[in-house]
Length: 397
Ligand code: HEM
Image (cartoon, rainbow, N blue to C red; front, top):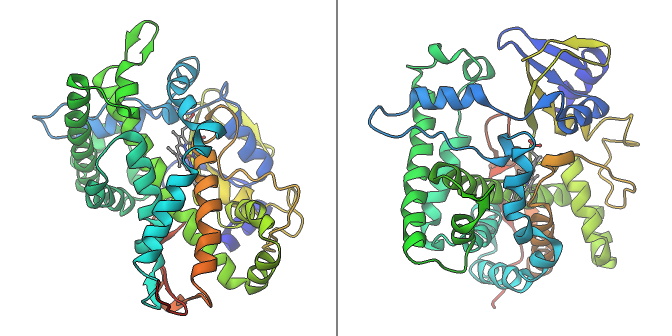
């Protein structure tokens, strides 16, 4: 992919894929404009929601809730405000002790083995347990969350299929499968929320049920969407950050030596992992009017993919972008997006990584990635490992 990005940045920085009729943007400045300028680039995904509703089971309420990631102002700000207090750096700092404890429990299970699948044993469970506890869903339902995440990531549709007109989607089996995953999540959260309605608890689900926008409680559909977004965005992305960090350190062993000598470099190393191996490949926007980027005019109502991972390797923004440099400053990467939709969970995932990675490096001496056994997620949304086997010096607890 990275060779393709380089070629596209140089030759076709704004490219129309005629098969899907979607536009692709590759340069840092253009990506930044498209994800920040909400007056001209909308985050609403009306077409996909309608397609999902069309493909849903006839005897079920279609999955039609809205979530902040797919909202424009002024509604976006009102809804986002409902959860910002749970994600402030201060609120997140309070979770540090719990993250340390979970990481230790996960490490205790594997240190004597000398090998593990880092994705399965640490990178996936850690953020999943954290977000499940914040939301208030039982951690024991983790296999269920994993099956949903797998179901959504194992997406076989290409862009041309997803962005077809709604009426052509009705019988698309892959879209029907995705819709079933959403329906399952939706049913699950509906049950959980009904329980909280009867008996509120000290968790984010109960807080969302009590929240009001313009004096009104959120609809059940919107509350479900919010929970689904937080659960999904809260785990698979950080999973990728953790596994990409291990992969980057393994490929650049000098950084491990440097981190051992100067552990205070870890936060800047995490930022470099986010830039160099961005966990989210690309975001989507729709043009509200005709817009010109890098001299090319994109018409109104066009679907645009903004490639964060290409922007983060743009030499116009980063000196020697192909070099993994854990001391890089400045490092204005767009791995968490930019502007009003900037990732709400950024302080949480940064904290999780800054707590877990030093513990992992210390407790798993001589860690090596078995590159032949590693397997990336499929698809063009997330960049991370489904499997990342590693070996290390085994030791007793
Ligand atoms: C938004 C990436 C972790 C929740 C975003 C966006 C990106 C992103 C690129 C912008 C979307 C857009 O502009 O359309 C990441 C990465 C993560 C991560 C790379 C980990 C390394 C988390 C976590 C949560 C979370 C832990 C926790 C709940 C959200 C939410 C939004 C969002 C709710 C929507 C914000 C809005 O639309 O205002 N994330 N994310 N993310 N992220 Fe994250």
